[in-house]
Image 1 (cartoon, rainbow, N blue to C red):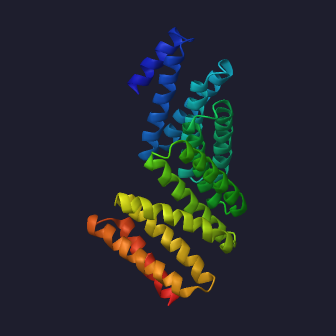
Image 2 (tube, rainbow, N blue to C red):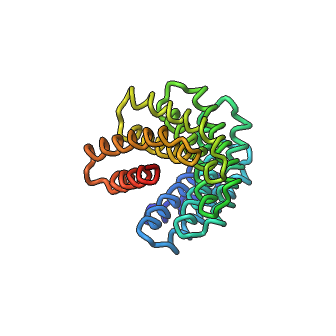
Image 3 (cartoon, rainbow, N blue to C red):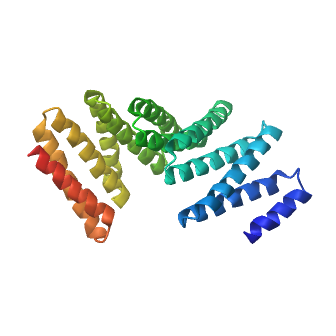
Length: 274
């Protein structure tokens, strides 16, 4: 808070310096996120809104600045995440939509820059979470498809970055799950199979826990669809392998509540198939 007060004084003295404005807005976002994490909601709302207002004003003054536009999207997404945390999903959808529109401008202006596509995909992931909570599955599917398209563009531009391949695999898994909720199981199968292939390749090269977890989660998603399509042997094989994956994760982190819950759910899925 002291640092923010100092920055506010500096901004008053140097109103035309973008660096100081940017630093103040970034500090306000950081403070708001800390307050959000410790459940100081009114203060978090106030500081995140102040950051949004600051960057929106800067965008009006400097409409051609990609730096200001990027900071604006960051402030919008931070406030959208806060709104989701306090159960205001409908408002969050509007905020994430605004962030995506700002990312559209950056992507159009810098089509050869994969990072802008990656940032837009991240905003789409935020939007999907809000839409899922509202049960708007048709919109979720369209959004997930756009997210996959963005990340495909990123992976084509930067095939050497494992994180981007992981993000694409996760996005495909999300799309497959959304299609299942919409009742489009047949469409979901090839998408989940692509995600599974990617996770298998990554886990074979680097047996990182997050790759194994992504692999197991995708196996479960595909198994659920195979079971609903009447392909019980294929579904059972996937669930059994996923159970082995979760057990492997628990060997590494035996106290992980997430892995314990995932293993329990996998056993439940196995019971339904049998």
